[in-house]
Amino acid sequence: MPRRVSLKTLERRIRALRLQAEKIKHRDNNPALRKIVKLVKRHGFSIGELRRAMNGRVRGLGGPKLRGRKVKPMYRDPKTGETWSGRGRTARWLAAAEKAGRKRTDFLVKTS
Image (cartoon, rainbow, N blue to C red; front, side, top):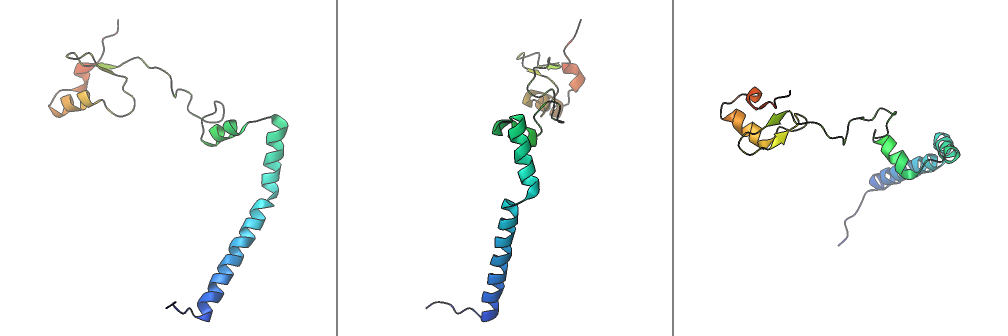
């Protein structure tokens, strides 16, 4: 048997749906969005370029400039020859050695 809903509950739902519909109407008719679309078309940007810019990956727009570049290793495991640049998460072999009581400086790569 279907559950009965009060008139107040139905009116509340109707109000919420009307508000949601108004937000959608205003979002589609937003002057700022129209201006952005006009600028994008004028300057010939692609969707991919816009996505990268929104994620901060376009050089000159505040994105990281060194992302994806190779970096010389700073640490080397003398047993296996594995290296770690010193960036990002600590290498497993180095974390295990530090846990065993060794110092990180023991693994520094010697530069001439």
